[in-house]
Image 1 (cartoon, helix red, strand yellow):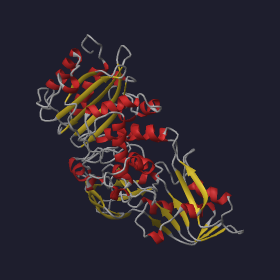
Image 2 (cartoon, one colour; image 1 turned 120 degrees about the vertical axis):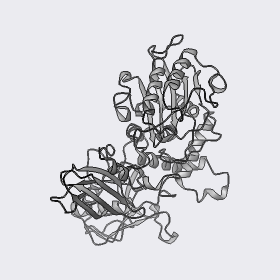
Image 3 (cartoon, helix red, strand yellow; image 1 turned 30 degrees about the vertical axis):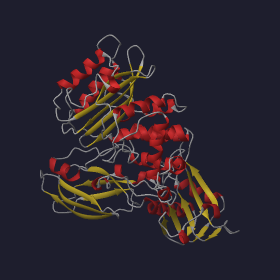
Image 4 (cartoon, helix red, strand yellow; image 1 turned 135 degrees about the vertical axis):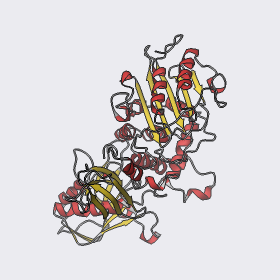
Length: 529
């Protein structure tokens, strides 16, 4: 859905609307730590080989900043030699925010391959009869495709294309229901450690096996036609399942905008309240949809009808919680149509460039579904009931260990970094980035990262280093991170990870960028420029 909430509003409106966490991305806010911290491991431990010039410049940045209560961690190593050039709190645990996506996407590319695709299928119990009639339900079966759309758009998979395939195959009528089946994944609706007030926003969308249009809609709010009337609340698309409860009022000219938005956690009732001045400027917010599989089924029925296929039944959903007698087995049904997603390389590129939480969460569940057996729970009794999200994070940990990377103490709770329970270290992140340079998917992974001053979430940052830093950003409230690859003036590739937690000042991103600039300017034997 493109960007993120991009609205400048008065303070009261911000207090009402602003969510606590971002991870699709990237919000500025923060506060860092002193170089003389007792946890510093500069001349010892993992940083025993510190380059004196690089250490001096990084510590100058750390010491001169005003963020004395925040906590920084920095790790730098040479991609060519593997030598650690600098470490500061690099073995300490940090909340990574969207740097968690580096873990998810790297492991997915390495294990599943760049050409992996998700298949969305349409099933019936048997073929249509000679008149094109399907007697029974039609099942729209999702397997976690992140990019399925309702309407056609280029080569992208869409419900409209599936409807057209059915029509071309001779289907003219469905005498049954349209069932949106998201039972392919098992597990919780949301990531462990997600905050309740993040869930209504687009970046907290439910990672359903049957996702559609990124499981989010646009809500546009503007003043009414005259003072005293309700403000205008418009949802796009109009077919959205959200039901608006409009309790707003258009106020006097010059009044303060004070609008609140709240979607119930387990439903699609959307309450909008507050005052909007008659001369106020409208704005948009992007909200998630509850039960995207039901929305997909509803949209698919509409697509079938538009294509000329009559449907007598109604939209329904089915998930892994259904009783055994009601579960659907694709092996016992007939596939009438299917659409494949874009290849994993393109999905990962979007995930990292735009910091898309939904894509990352669907990827980690796919890893769990496809490779979970390779990382079983120590308690065999838990494996049968383990969710694919939990299995996916176990696979990520197992992959790190297979590369000789220390995982002791790490807490990997989701795939996107929206969880406040994720805990990783700058060194672990750096060594993951190093391991990926030896992967068959190394180029696809590096190319997926935002490029300084050029695209993605680094489009407006580090412009003096355009094209020389490929790195993943991360932002939650009081948390910032940046990890990736930097090309030095001598054309050497350095791997780095910079993390900052407990930062209540908005200057943290600037400090991180200063450190990244020092790293990119590194030349052995000299002070970085």
